[in-house]
Length: 281
Image (cartoon, rainbow, N blue to C red; front, side, top):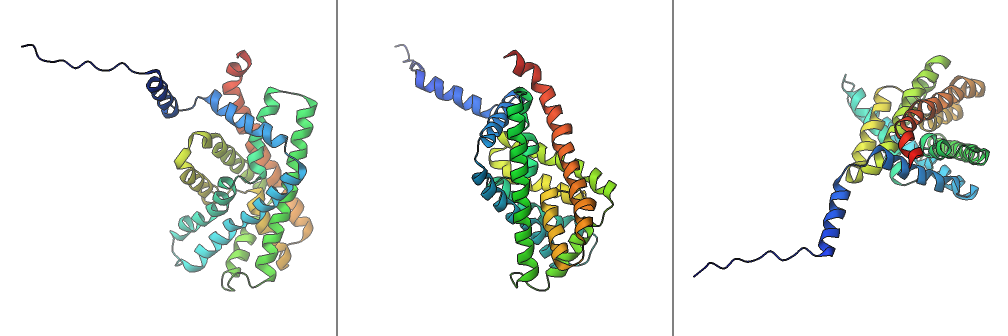
């Protein structure tokens, strides 16, 4: 008697579609697809109202203060050892994790997100929308940073023993020369733009992606305009920094450095690798 051979049932169209979707989801995104994800997000951001941008930007400016607070807490309670510097800079990542994963408006993210639409559609209208968004978001971030700094300086919201560490961190961040503040702002701009570029395919690893690369900003002693604005504001309100030095010695050099790093360096390079694919499609 011949053995019974069970035939494999034919694969249904639904199963084939499910398998294809699984393969597509498992495959790494191509640079063109990453570009398209960020471009569409940037286009949506450019269409948001000023009111929406302002509230989101203020929230981001306030919550980025967790970077300063977290680093200060680590510095206060860790023993004074050689390895403390590397560990305390993990605290710097806290504000960025809250802001980026909370989908709030952070100026340095927009040096790539909202620039990519301009790379594809080079028009005066898109440029004006970009400059509007940059101005609104940066101003809102600074307002939020000053609000958080005022909470640190003028109220008992944080323990007294942590305030000296905040002041010490602020003095270091704003104590660089103009040239040094500018040049150190470029790597920070590149790193934040890199985070934005990698996030579309990060999925569950997004937390560790942000944690690792924002730690690198602090460990590398690079300058970030929004987190640095909290430190600048804290020192201004505490009386340890003059307005002129704050604006011309810290804020403007770091701002220009971040823009060059995020836009001129990273975004143009990212655009260069997808330009032929985008314009041919």
